[in-house]
Length: 55
Image (cartoon, rainbow, N blue to C red; front, side, top):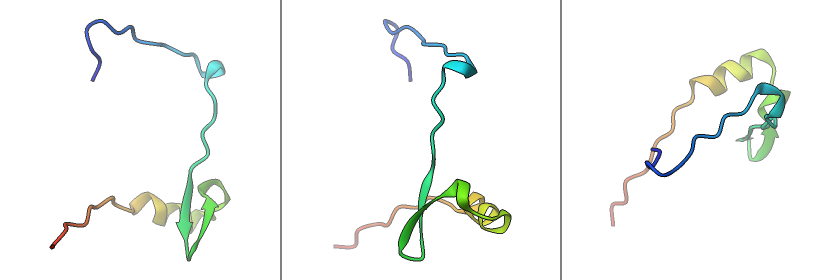
């Protein structure tokens, strides 16, 4: 959420830096850009969850 005294910074697409997303698969990390179509679809269906502490 933006505070009233902050200015919004606008960037054009040419000024942006590409961000590579990595994820953990089968015990090691890989960039999502290296996934095949099936693995990309599986990655898109993942959901973030938080484990509730019981102790």
